[in-house]
Image (cartoon, rainbow, N blue to C red; front, side, top):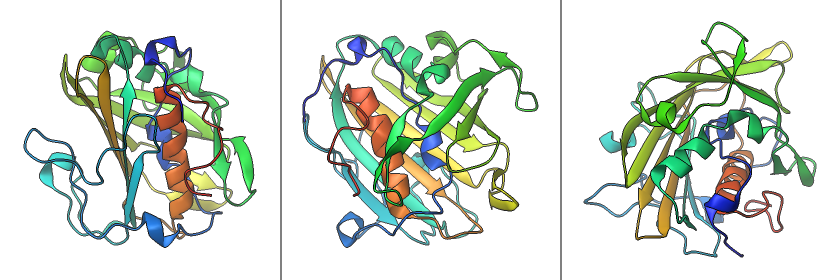
Length: 264
């Protein structure tokens, strides 16, 4: 796989949408199963799964009915989580954390993002519409978030239409830690996510945390944790893996629909 600088990407990464409905896909292969709990990045512990090498596919691990997450993963579980997926890799960026943040805040550019659908056995559109909103209880669109807003620690909101659900889904996003060398973004669904008359996820049942850390002058680590705390339908691992892979590939400068898919 070929890597190019993030600064050359015209589109941005949105990690929150990785968690939207995955009800129509097959189960993930045993190779994607993890044998232990995730280890989120810290100054003390190496992450688990370990970071994929530059130019290679990211590492992936999954857990079903995970009861406890490490405190530094920033997801508190009241009951065993239906599904947890972690994806870990590296990417090249010659700019600053502000350059990464502004791309993460460019909600509108995720419209049309493709991902691999196991059900269709083909690449299909993941996000049919996306825009930042003024508040969680309105569909009033606003401009994309600035780097300053993304790094400020304030709670921001955005709306996305997912090709596997009905209507607009509202999410929150907030930087819970940031510095020139790192950024930790936390997100959850504010609205219920529905497929016709069926509620797939109630508010706050879809959570994610993204860790971006500088490794050296031009290399950064990417660690995303996606947690489905509960779902009325069985969550499908391959779908969630492929959604995370789409945004990871977008961030590192690869075409999101480049073969092979991470979870075929």
